Amino acid sequence: MSDQSPQALEEEQQRPAKTELMVNDFSIQVATVNGSGSQSSNSVLLRSIFQMGIPVSGKNLFPSNIAGLPTWFTIRVNKDGWIARKKEIDFLIAMNADTAREDVMGLEPGRVVVYEETLRLNQLRKDLTFFPVPFAKIATGITTDARLRKLLENMI
Image 1 (cartoon, rainbow, N blue to C red):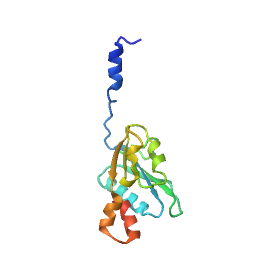
Image 2 (cartoon, one colour; image 1 turned 60 degrees about the vertical axis):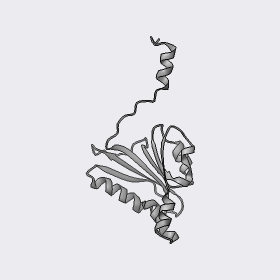
Image 3 (spheres, rainbow, N blue to C red; image 1 turned 90 degrees about the vertical axis):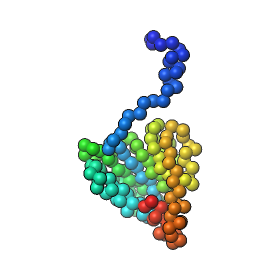
Image 4 (tube, helix red, strand yellow; image 1 turned 180 degrees about the vertical axis):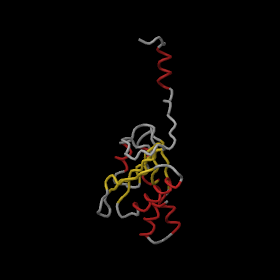
């Protein structure tokens, strides 16, 4: 039994949970569709982290070989060189409209989601940090070629 008053207990429950500082120890899941340039953009992201001197590994979680089907790429960043996937996803990059809702709903509270702004994923949950990015709008400003524009969205 607690020595705290009911009011003190209620105030403690309403305080935001303390978050643990994460430095070079996190996972990124990139959810895209096959044939959208995702393999190239995932490799660029992986190599960028590696060239900063941070141990990193990457793996296609579900590498679809059929254009247009979902594919997920997991990146593990770990200062100690661990290469196994983490069960938890710390950062989700949601680029697949067909799986975005399910991908977001599967995250633990406190995680971060970067997504195409037109998906409006920030309306799904209040316990995540959302960063809407106008990937399609940015790509449209760069090229009028539809195929290249789709590839640019993932690269951006």
